Length: 531
Image (cartoon, rainbow, N blue to C red):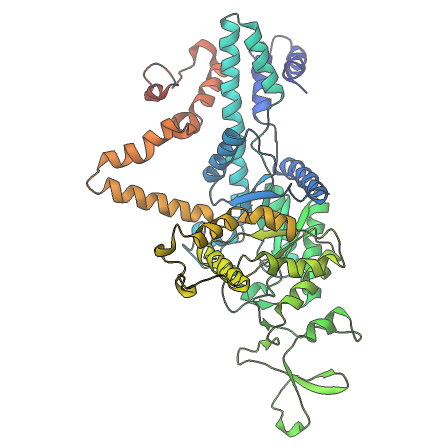
């Protein structure tokens, strides 16, 4: 429904209440409705799920159409990110949000900063989803309010051509609301707990849930040691729990991202139940590190399983955890991924220890032998030392080519001494094209950085504190922040406008007409930043 149709609809409704609603403006109603396109989180989840499905199909047709996101730990950060994307690229197409459980734990828990071990309040996750979308919807309201004001100015000036142009822009307006991939960790409990939390996250607006195959009460960050996986049937139950939540709430296109931590996880808490040789439980147990038992007198409350007609003892640690054989991580990842896709997952996430395209591709190729359209969400993690990793990758490639490497020490390649060298320049180029190259070679549909805004907040605050509390004083803020905001067109330099002051003035005028007490008059200091 376009702008004029929206006004006409509102006018008909007002007219159905003769006299009583005479003080209500049909155009004001239409404007408020357009500024609040999404009435609930479920509206957002359905809308964004459809976007992701279209993007997945586009990627299948052309791997150059990969998607991206940055992790955001506050609604304002998400809002400014999408405003920036619209400003610089003119569209939000193929750009998403990522909600990182790591950042929720570190920044949003009432317990204070926590490690990424599912110790934070599970309700803080849907609360952040709701917050992210509240700020994105406010960005819509703000931008449209500016367009409505420009429309009024064009009309007052009698400029019909400009008024028509603005109205067409309103009709073609692209919302700031984009898909979010939200981290549900290992489900925060059993499958029922996963289902209940999934519902809350979907109701808040999440169209995509990312769940991992770790034990929920032993969950670790994907880039830390001590990860413990669960048998496939346990993980599939949680995938189904998420699907049931989507279907119950009418989000039929909802997306489940199945994450495997098996590459770095050498432990399991359970021996899988197996009904017959070769089933999924038997395959899981086949990776256990076992030793044959021939003398029963050596047993001390041990668990034994049968393997190839022999009794074997899985290696059990003092923690009561069982150990997998070394070197089986990639094989377990491949099995995890195939089984997840065959049991309802839509996308995969393989957590790796380094950003190496061929390592990722070696697993994806095997998965695609069974499920040809398998696609990955990949963590371009700040836990990787990207500079060192890629310089070492170039070093290793050059070594295979027989190039002279006498000027380089592989162990010291992070050193500033190598900045500007041929090797460093090639490494930086590989980093620059990593997402494009990995999308083409390794089946990566979506690239994300889990916690970039955690680091950018720390870096920018460090720079400001160093200058402001040092010799620069106030110039540290003016030169390092405000002047850059003005010259780079950062909208929140007019922070009163960004926070909704002008929207409030518009509403006051709708409600009270000429009697409205508005904040945006001649004495508002934001006028110092007028374009």
